[in-house]
Image (cartoon, rainbow, N blue to C red):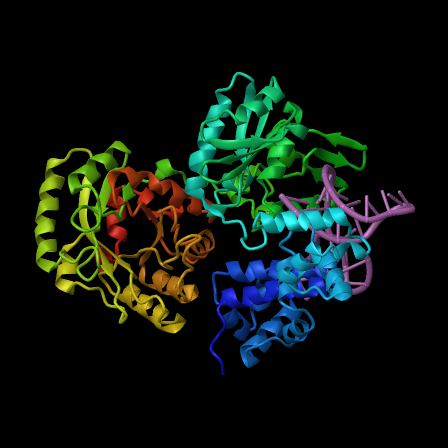
Length: 580
DNA sequence: GCCGTTTTCGGCCCGACTGTTTTCAGTCG
């Protein structure tokens, strides 16, 4: 029997099936069902193959009997028959062609049927030879568009997504600049950046203004903006010097709430929301809420009014993903999400002893300035490339130095810990007697990412079961937009952590945010204590917990779900080493 | 293909834009 297909493979297959069925002319709802299923599988915190084996896979949203059978076929035979059949029918280049503007599955299919065009190359050739205009529904204008797209390189590069921290750096600055403009009234960030997702395609800003044309024109005057264009329909588009595109929309004050709600999304949240209320005769759009009973469209100045009209409490943007938030009946049902100010301790940071840029004392003083009351210094262990010299004797000397510093500093407790490497055998790379002398131990995987799901899971579970490993750091090793998580069975990790009282970190490095939102939610629900750490390598990155907190909020976490919101006296007894 | 205290069948968001149309289907966000 072939090994279990990872969730990412199953999701990719469903996405491919959606593309193929679309080319095949299937009804849109069937295509959408496959895309929804792909998303559901991709985000599932458990192994979908394992769920299928247990007969529980249809409990995932968007997976029914038919898709269960397809997953089963994939597990049994390594392939899905329907996909094989459709692949034989449509060349892969057909899907590539739909990346061009104005060319969707229907029209691509038509060009394939009538001219045999089956790739970007043959499409370009046909456009140059003016052959496209011979097909009904296509004209000279389309040939021009196609050639312009090729010239602009649209065909060969899907637009890159930008990590949220980089996008917000410019987004926040542009919002501030617009707010300072004399013509502006309200200016707010909307879009996926407002939902604090991992990475964004572009930025959306919504504003009201006493002089809309003046505010739209002002966008181009902001120093961060390389070029701005178009002020029709009260919308201006800009590209920053850092290559991020941004839309500014100036709206009437009495529609500000509708437009904010619409542009904040997510798409799935809005679709589910609209579907839910259409049965009550209410139709939601960016322009207002149309009530069939009265024929009136209600405009809303605030989002609160929009949700209230639909019988819902205001929903924090981080929760708007159609993951259950539409079942809230009143404000009492909405979790009070954790805030950065709730954090009292930071239990993962580095100093010049390994690969950090600041001394222990500098880190402690900076943390105290941020309002933290305790920190753990966790330099890399001996076998890590950056911390080779933190050998056992050096770490023992560091224990003495930290005790001295802690006694000397007022207003902050400084603890000595380590970020120990988890070897391929699951063992930490210091001896137990040394680990026992520390206040705090994080175990992290830094090597041998490719050993496979079972070996990686066994490795981390072994570390979790070690009595002196208090927490697991950046548990999946992902780097947003750069490196996929290594293959690991998060279900088993969570089970082991819950069973042993081992904490799991949400690492706040802006390109990690690991655990991600979905896994963090699953872990917290399973009773695992979550911690949010900066993993700072300098005093200036201690505030990175902003990104970890954002992930925690997207995971529906409250302060009570996160252990380092507790003061040290209450946190200390929760460590495995303190519980014996 | 999924889903259900209004349904196990008949539903499954909303609106703008575009090019090629003679009334609109397909695409896009």
